[in-house]
Length: 340
Ligand code: KG4
Ligand code: ZN
Image 1 (cartoon, rainbow, N blue to C red):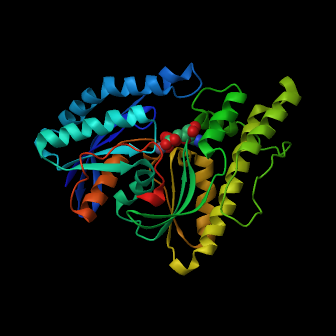
Image 2 (image 1 turned 120 degrees about the vertical axis):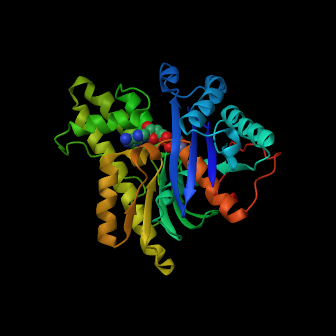
């Protein structure tokens, strides 16, 4: 089975062709066109600008991946696109383009939930099986999930305010770093000697739920910056921020592992843009070792937004459902994983 996936829910336009062979996925060609430099001067993603950029580049990217894979459009077995959650304008571009390709070739169209795609992509390697626990941390979401099938997600915990990536981005902005802030904070934190002079809070860490909260953390960083003027060591502050986020995530996942004992969970998956953070990855590897569960995370490139994960989720959907989705399926800017 060969599936072409399209991702256009935020500020990356991506097209990928993935081939399934013996239950595993192989990328034949993937292109990711980031719009980050176009949005940077606004300090965040401008929806109207994003949808225009998607619309300008989607056709060229599709032609490029077909050419690089040495495939004609008729060799594609189905067309998958992210149809939510995300920015409506971008979702419409990708969804309508995939539908058009499905119509002209007479092949199925597959409507894919972006979060489902983040959670499943690691299964391309054929190692992770259901049920598994998943921490999905991106710019828009922070979710602790029990995944029992390709379309069965139980939300065990989530952020009650800012998503983890959002907290990284906002904190980076306060520190005068470029958007997107996550990778910048990680780089800055690497320069820290890991002094613990800053004592940031660990919100909700002891509340015995699996929920998360990051807006207070961001406010504490702001107070430190405002009070310290030019004297603060920003590398130490970035390190302490990253450590605080990581401590909160670890504690809640530890609780999730304990509370789902009945499921005999063997695998834990860390995914989403923030999962490309090396410090957080290594902290979770240690936790999994202690708790005797296998640690998995997609390659760093597959943690941030990409169309390979959309194509792979399409493969899982078609394998199970055996047919495509209706052509009158419309994008859902808000689409929770428990409503698949
Ligand atoms: O999954 P993603 O690419 O897009 C969404 O679906 O939101 O995640 C983007 C988020 C941004 O907030 C970005 O700052 C964060 O992931 N991020 C990171 C790192 N790389 C990306 N956060 C922390 N450390 C990183 N290395
Ligand atoms: Zn994402």
